[in-house]
Structures are given as C-alpha cells and as structure tokens.
Image 1 (tube, helix red, strand yellow):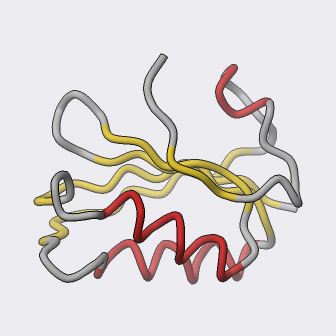
Image 2: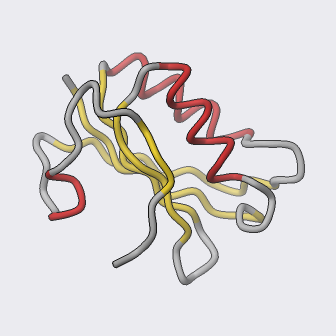
Length: 100
C-alpha cells in the first residue's frame, strides 16, 4: 500500500473539482480525502496501490470540465504523517472533507 499527498493549483475551486475528484478516486478504489485550501488550491490525500494513485494524479491534471489545472504536486508518504492522514485506511473510501 502506498500513500500520497497532492496539491492541485489553478482554477480548481468553484468548478466541482472536489466532487469530481471524489467520484474519480472512488471509481479507482482509493481511500482518502480531498478539500479546498485557503490559497485557492485543492489538496488531496490518497491511499492505495502506486499505479492507482498515479492514475488519480493523471486525472487531477485534467480535472472536471471548467477547471484549468496549472500544476499538480505529488508527494509520496512512507506512512501517515499528519493527524488528518492517520484515519485513512484501505477500504474506507474517498470523500470530500474540510480544513479543521
């Protein structure tokens, strides 16, 4: 199992990016979450096999209609490093969440 954190920048808020990402990740069978960030970017955390996370990252480069993605930064994680990553385990699904 692999874990990755993604930061997507561009016109990605207000265009159904999070909901579309949730649907794409669930179709791929990933666990994790996606959320809007105060700086206008979108952040995602994904848990699954490496190839599936890479497929999700490729989807993130395009996003839904209406999005204009400028960049996708992907950082692989050896383990859950932050509190919001620790509850994500395989099989728990992928959902939209909010900053706490």
